[in-house]
Image (cartoon, rainbow, N blue to C red; front, side):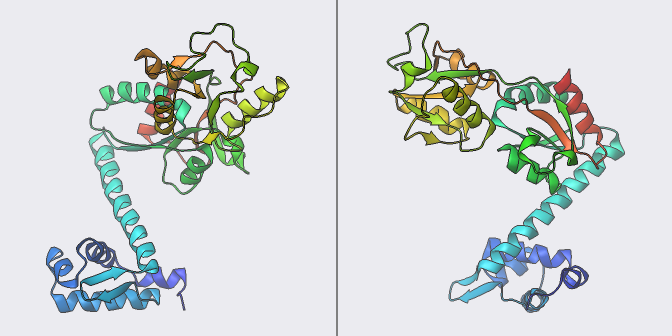
Length: 305
């Protein structure tokens, strides 16, 4: 039977988590014990103690060594997260004590990447010893990471959350959208296109219920057209770009700032079609109940400059 959270917290030690990580990396008690400067009997005893704490076997014993089972992989994953969090804790403490540097973990949706990159460049000129981690994902996933304390700040939309009042949002302007395609697309040089002209093309679109997908669906409804059939769904910038480069018949809607780099290098072309529907603005989002750290405050200053 799985013990209670209180029991796990009271019995589990950081050194035991380090042993789990070493066992996963080396696949044997002997190699893991050598890496941690432990005796092999001591490491074996510690492993038995860890499995007793969790009330479950964490590894399969095979002729080749140890192989983590499903429960073991789960525990090891969180052991690594805890270990990483402690590394980040020390980095942030060093920054506080030295009056500079520190650590910043930022989440961003695709459309905000160019603005974030520019802001981080300016920030790192002022704080060269600042460690930065950037995670690109959907608004829903970024807000979940923000809730868990895995992000210091997110650039996304809070409307996807069931509790938007849990966040403090500093708004930015809506994202202008453009329709892009391979330079060899049949309509690449056509002027004054209408949405109906693109019905024979295949589309790369955002997944269902994402704000930019809802914007595109609204555009088709207002034009009295059915949404394209057999579209390829992805929220990945790189996947979208790769698909457009590979298939000259595909088209996609992208935030103008995101598409600009590909347009500047002639990787894509902007079709002569105006998207009239306005996408929901994204914001600079922090948890309402958390005081801003110095690096977060500095980043917000750069983003809103």
